[in-house]
Length: 258
Ligand code: HXC
Image 1 (cartoon, protein in one colour):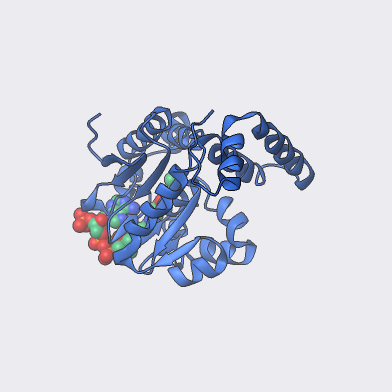
Image 2 (cartoon, rainbow, N blue to C red; image 1 turned 90 degrees about the vertical axis):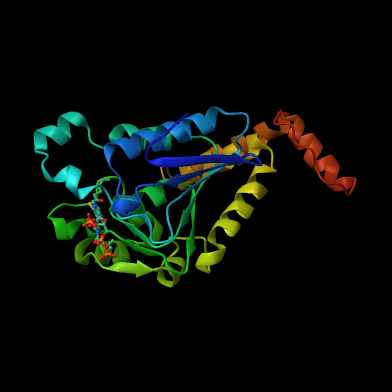
């Protein structure tokens, strides 16, 4: 499918989706959000994809929602339009793992988009922030909610109230990102991680995603019960037999997603 604001490549069961609005540092306009969410949904349905990467350019993952596009809108416009809600819900419905590979600015909606992915690998040049406060607004797709759960209240308040940026080292220290690598190695690192995930049983990787995300939605007790049931249920799969047999026979497993 042809897109205008993103570039999609599929190789070795990994779909890499590159945000591509260089003239606006990949600012998220309605078209980009629509195309991105459609591309992710399509990859989720495709037999050729087992893991996805969302990335931007060297200078910017995404510098936030498109301020030019938002500036003329009224409350009625954004409320009736349910601005950003449709694409966000669509991304949240993706069941295969999504890695955000972040280089440069991930600000406002850009930081929130990265957090909508399942984990973030950052270049040492990455800068995260929720600078909406400088525009007289607040975060709209997770900057006060996901960020608080990921880095805690103190840093989430600091970032949302002052609008300051967090560099890659602080982001790793705070638990916002899983790894930091030199900028030149970002895509190799993200692709390597995605390929590793793509080799596993798809059933198991989808269950991991569902179960870890569940931990943010429910109590520990309920989460543990959910995990236990999914753990038991995977014993009904051929991949469990294959994975354990391969270990015992000292060979690589051949998962068939069954
Ligand atoms: C529209 C943007 C943009 C944005 C940058 N540009 N960010 N356009 N929306 N969010 C455009 C600039 O206008 C400029 O276009 C070009 O990209 C290059 O940006 P510069 O500012 O010239 O680059 P630089 O000096 O390097 O500064 C980089 C920057 C700065 C620090 C990232 O651009 C910046 O502060 N951007 C805004 C960040 C922000 O406030 N984000 C939150 C948005 S609100 P021209 O045509 O002038 O060359 C938000 C709400 C989310 O995200 C709610 C739900 C999704």
